Amino acid sequence: MTVEDAKIIELPKILDARGNLSFAEQNNQIPFEIKRTYWIYDVPGGESRGGHAFRKNDEMIIALSGAFDVVVDDGERQKRFNLNRSYYGLYIPKGLWRTMENFSTNAFALEFGSEHYDKSDYVHDYDQFKKLKSDEEI
Image (cartoon, rainbow, N blue to C red; front, side, top):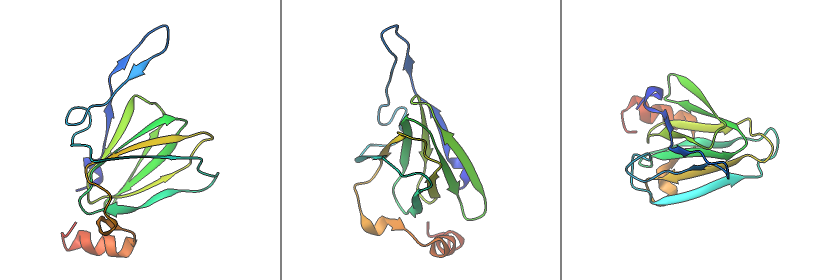
């Protein structure tokens, strides 16, 4: 996988004077079966999240509130995505390093994963990630 495989997916947006509605369905806007859902919130100023890659897990990240950046890295190149609208999701396939940073006040990130939580699926060491990429093991 390369940074070009990560992409913004526009979610349906239903406009209504009473308030807008957006949604995402597995195997439709979210290009995988959802096996895990989690959220990140109350991130202190200047802190970052992520800083890892997954061996098997694909992800979709949506900024439900506020804004933050997601930096996707394939070991050779980086691509920065600014998430600041609740009707855009960032699809990140397995095998890419990701870091979330520049969280605004009250930012709320909703994340969907293609795999159940498995500690061994995480690669936390960037040098190990680069080696796995060069050996085509991730």
